[in-house]
Amino acid sequence: MSIFESNSREDTYNFARALGEKAEPGQIFCLSGNLGVGKTVFAQGFGAGLGVKEPMASPTFTILQEYSDGRLPLYHYDVYRVGDVDELEETGFYEYVGGDGVALIEWAELVEEVIPGEAVWIKIEKDVEKGFDYRKIEMTD
Image 1 (cartoon, rainbow, N blue to C red):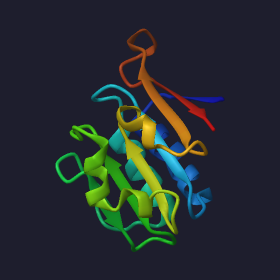
Image 2 (image 1 turned 90 degrees about the vertical axis):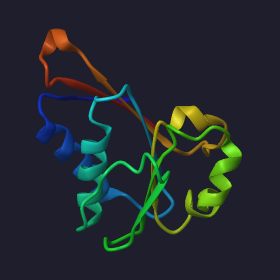
Image 3 (image 1 turned 90 degrees about the horizontal axis):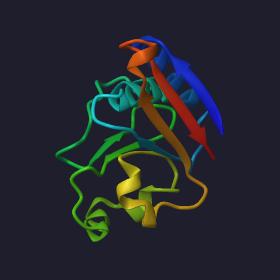
């Protein structure tokens, strides 16, 4: 496990961007953390690292947003509103995750039973005692 301490949105964005720059086909990154901890900022930085040019928002209501303008396809999932893992089949989840692109899955702990074992888990936490913008980012692979 590795820990990164972020003191700003820019720190989080740049950390994620560096991960995106190194990402390889088939990799799976699972994001967890409470509402408002910076998962979307992380996703935007990660996408920038892959070369995604179009604006990225959390795909909360669509479950999946695909980005194909970077060096690898990015499959950005937000499974917060998934009621049953069977709903993922409709999104191409089993073809995309571990496929030719990179999967970034927000709220992955809600569908942990279908996440492949080789996934990289990233947990983002606030600690207001260390400052309003402070985030601890734990990465386990």
